[in-house]
Picture 1 (tube, rainbow, N blue to C red):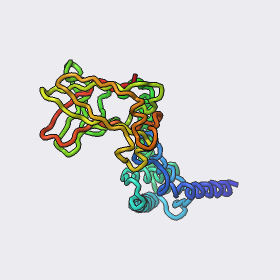
Picture 2 (picture 1 turned 60 degrees about the vertical axis):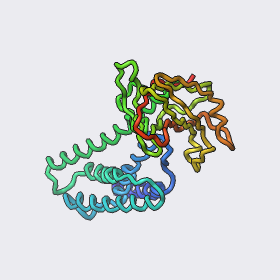
Picture 3 (picture 1 turned 120 degrees about the vertical axis):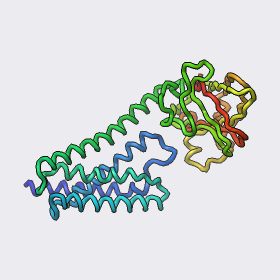
Length: 305
C-alpha cells in the first residue's frame, strides 16, 4: 500500500508538471501588471521544480552528495534553458528565477533522509534551504502588505512618508528634506536627456467617484519650468501606446509653489477613440523635454478630490 500511494503521488506530481509547463511561455504577468501579481507568479518556479523533483525521483538513482550535485546541475541547466527560451517568446528574463528553480528541488531533497550525509550536514542543508524559502515567501508577503496599504491610500495617490520611493516611482526621485518648508515632499531631478522625469506606477488606480486630480509642485528656481503631465489606463499600457490614446497636458511652473486642479472628466475623455477606464488608471508621468541644464522640482501633493 505505501508503494502504491507513493506511485499515485508521483503521477499527481507529473500531472502538475505537465499542466504548469505551458505557463513558462504563455500567460503570466506582463510589463504593465502590478508588483503583487509578479511576485506571486515568481513563486510558481519553486512549485514547478518541487513537483518535477517528486515526479522524477532522482533518489532512485543517486544518493548523498551525488544526488544533490547531479540534481543541482540538472536544474541549473534546465533553468538557464528556460530563461533563454522565454526570451525568444518576448518574456522578461529574470535570472533570480534560477535560484527559485533550485529552491524547488532543494526543498524536496532536504526533506528526505539521504544516505551518506552526517546528521550535522543534513540539518545544515535543511536550515539553509528553509531560510532561503522563508526569504522568498517573506518577500512576496511584504509586497502583499505594501499593496494593501497602497489600496487604502485614497484620496492620496502617494504616501510621502515612504523612506524609499523606488517601489512606486521610476526616475531620479528621492525624499526631500521634510524639515525644510520650501523643499519638502519628493525631489524630482531632471536631466538634459531628451525626455527626463518621473513615473508613478504603483498607486490606487480606481479613480471613480472623484472629480479632480490635485498636484502641487514647487519650483525652487527663479525662472519658469514647463512639465508635461501624462496619464493613462491599463488598456493603454497593453495596447500600442499611441499618443492620442492617453491624457497629455502642459504644466507651466512659475517660481515657487504651483497648485494644479485637473478635471477628471477631461482625463476620462482624453483618448481619441474611447473613454479612459477610470477604474484602472495605471501610470502618471511628469517629464520635461530638451532641457539645456539640469533642473529640480519638488512634488508636494498628489491626490484626488
